[in-house]
Image 1 (tube, rainbow, N blue to C red):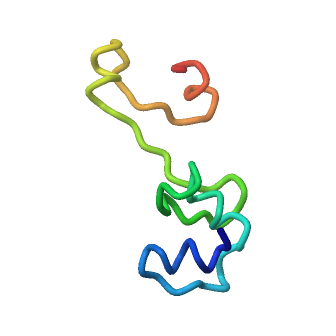
Image 2 (image 1 turned 90 degrees about the vertical axis):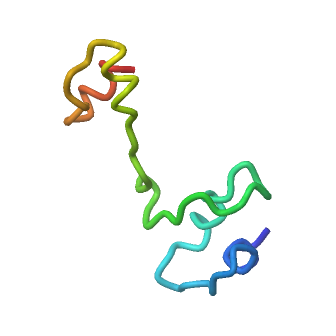
Length: 72
């Protein structure tokens, strides 16, 4: 599916400010719908579940990437 088709399927107009190939990556698995609109190869959303962190005894959310890896 082309980037324009992915955007149109979601009711959005294709925006030339986004990298076209990465728009397609935001629809993964293909056909599941646009879940994110990345600005670059490494951008996206980072979310955390505070309830899970608390359950694991981790008081603070990870701050630097080293913490993210250690928590994983």
